[in-house]
Amino acid sequence: MKPFQIFNTLTRIVEELRPGHPPDVTFYSCGPTVYLPQHLGNMRAYVFVDTLRRAIEFNGFRVRHVMNITDVGHMTSDEDAGEDKIEKTARAEGKSPLEVANFYIAQFKADCAKLNIELPPDAAPLDEPHPPQSALCRATDNVPAMIAVIEQIIAHGYGYVTPSGVYFDVEKWRGPRGMGRLSRQSLDEQHAAQRLEHSADKHSPHDFALWVLNQPHHMMQWESPWGRGYPGWHIECSAMSMKYLGETIDIHSGGLDHIPVHHENEIAQSESASGHPFVRYFVHNAFLTGMAGAKISKSAGKFPVVADLVTAGIDPLAFRWLCLMAKYRSELKFDLEIIGAAANSLSRVCQLLADLSFATKQQNDSEWVAEYRDRFRDALNDDLNTAQALSVVIEMVRRAHGDVEGHPDRDPRIWNTLRSFERVIGVPLEKLSDDLRVDAGPNIVSGGGVNTPMKLSGNAEAQVESSSPKGRFQGDPSKQTADAWAYALALERHRLREIKKFKEADAIRKDLFDGGYIVEDISEAPRFRLKRR
RNA sequence: GGCGGCGUACCCAAGUGGUAAGGGAGAGGUCUGCAAAACCUCGAUGCGUCGGUUCGAAUCCGACCGCCGCCUCCA
Image 1: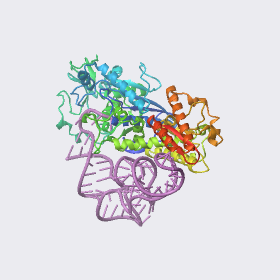
Image 2 (image 1 turned 60 degrees about the vertical axis):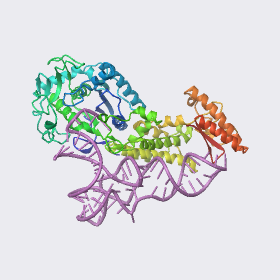
Image 3 (image 1 turned 90 degrees about the vertical axis):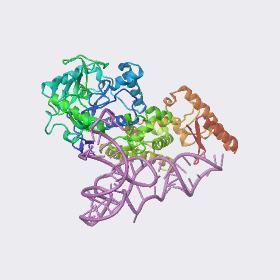
Image 4 (image 1 turned 180 degrees about the vertical axis):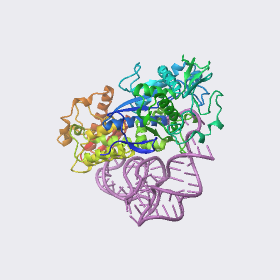
């Protein structure tokens, strides 16, 4: 059995995950800057983070997950000039920065929920948490921690104070642990000096702000040892990862675009402050790309968001399914046709599951399932190869279903394994398939979406039914009422068909369709299947 | 200019030295009053092009073509 392996940007090879203090894994993810809705490219990153966390947990580790929320300090230009992103939106919308941040945080959480992305709990007001703990933490709640880190950086000789702010001295941060370790690109190779304006206070154009001073029109300001001002963007990640997870963390994630600047700067800040290695494994996800393979980005102006999926009538979970169909390190193309294909794929799998007899969920898994369990884990542990893992899931479901419909040796007992897969891929297949299936009211016999009229109750489907638990009828009462209506009609249609009144039967089928139900006649037996559209 | 990535069937996408996963769409078949669903079968002798290494390459090397990203904010 393979151990969990992941590509480490620091070494550029796929390595076995060996956390510093097993079974704990400390995991810091760069989170959203809350000034606009997160687009689907952003959401792909969070699906990746969530799936990675689930996969690591699947391997028996206990993950301490911290995600930051940037609600101050992220400039529209990284040269510490420009405008604070949150304040820009605040001015545009006539709101306070806090209102803007709160609004988009709520939206971010709602979008994550639609994709079944589990976020860490909101940070508790703790100072130095011990042991490391999971947290969703806001930059503005952690300014004192940032100031403390900046003080350490200065004390160790890597920061200097000027009238316009406190800067990190990249020239001092040289050698094998210096700048360029992640990006493998020396500062000399970069042309920032020629292309960017920079403050005359900086010793080097590559120096970046730790704390910004004397920007009186900036709305968010804090007192500091150097005067009133606000933190630079990169410092929040250094400060919060250290505060919640310790000086050396196991995994740090982010988009590919963060490699050259943001993460490079984080390493410099964190290691110069603490004197210890910052991160064991850096992991970076590739982009979602648009029609011409071009990156979807906020600055491009127009970008799809979760709400657009809903508008298009696509279950947001289909987007998660799509993300899983590719490897996180590969660019993934996105347009309406592609997400539609993913939605079809997901919906077919769920329909197959809806057809599997309900009662089989109660049983132990069949022996043949073991092979799929191994293949699933191996795929997952091979640098999070979700594309292969998903194909294993689909093959298993198909086989179980094929056994039911086509073969005498039917054996659909896969539910325990399926649930363990679900916990990793984060798509609630069982729930989705339950939602599809129509269960008739308690007084009517039905069977796992394959409804069997009462007078045929001598067959195997109905026998299984007598032992089913009552719990399945809990849920939305209005839905149950509608289902009872649909079931009565379907039953009526079934009787009409038996006396060959096909015209009337077809009319009922159309009524049902218009009412949101699909009725299908099953060939092998005088039965029918009723499901929600 | 520097650094990096990609190019696999109609579309999306795994595979990175041993003879092309999976999904979507499509075609044929079985079944069926019809429809739908399901099941079966068929879809790249070939993985941008041209060379090279090798018993053997989509996978390694070289050249070329095309697309994209980063070095400005960005997942």
